[in-house]
Image (cartoon, rainbow, N blue to C red):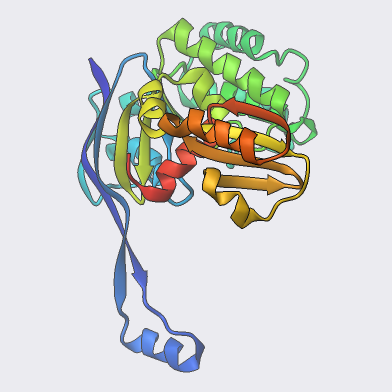
Length: 326
């Protein structure tokens, strides 16, 4: 059964047209004109209970705007959204009790107080009895490995520890639905891995439904079997990650190390050049031309090394965003 239902969702912002200079300012003051910017353009999708879905798009594609509408922070211009049967922007208590929004670039913890104090404040807001709060706190602290950080002021925690504490604060009421906007933003590799492991365990232990945005493809490949892609406000793909890679990666990556430097134009016949660093060249070559291309490279060029691999996921997704076509 779908717990997240989005139908023909739109968000339009009116932006003033103002010319620079004093004349532009006076004209704008007395005769204002506006233009419409569609941040989200008629998107529809459903998410089933317990799904872990990646929500991908380039900067400015409309991801955060969509999450804010799903969590009720902003009102849609048109279209319908239901989260667990509730309309988000009405901000009903029953709705707020079953969802949580975590934004990696925002914080809810009080900077100069221990994180534990913020957890108690959140427990009071959600009217959790003391026994339930203590039990959930113990569970989440163990899952997040935060035993030694609860009584330290938040400002003394590392970035990774703060992100874990932010997650704990957002999950103390045990929401069924999580909207996560870049939860691993700025974290080092170890902290990212720890947060991913926690999210996977939370999803499995509590059958939580999670919609995740991230620019770190390691987050998506580790956690999400299904992805939704948004480009310039429009939904351009909704399906399995594996199917996306199969349909949009008709290339292999060929990396060669040359014995001698060669001009770029002399290399372009072998494939689409992705990068040239010194004497190391990376091509994208169509799969059906791979065997013939490698034979020509070995015949015509003096090379020290050659490897063939699938293109990195980041590049495949990046190509989707550049064209807006799947």
